[in-house]
Amino acid sequence: MKMKFLEWLKGKNRRQKLKEKYCSLMRRAYEIAPKNKKKSDYLNKKARNILRELKKLENRQDFSHNHSG
Image (cartoon, rainbow, N blue to C red; front, side, top):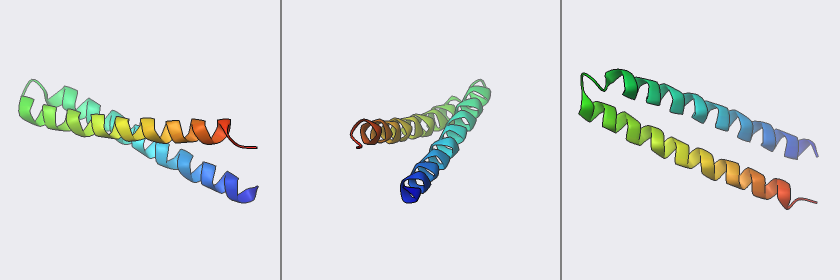
């Protein structure tokens, strides 16, 4: 039981870090867009990749909650 809690906590920390990174990249992409569209597009692409990873983590989390004991 303790191990599952630690795994859950670790996953939560990872998701939180990814969410913060996603928000930071989106903010930077928005702020830089008027000056440098190419860099803005690059930051936006990185943010979308993080969002994709977040969705995968959340899907795994939902699956493990729905299929556990």
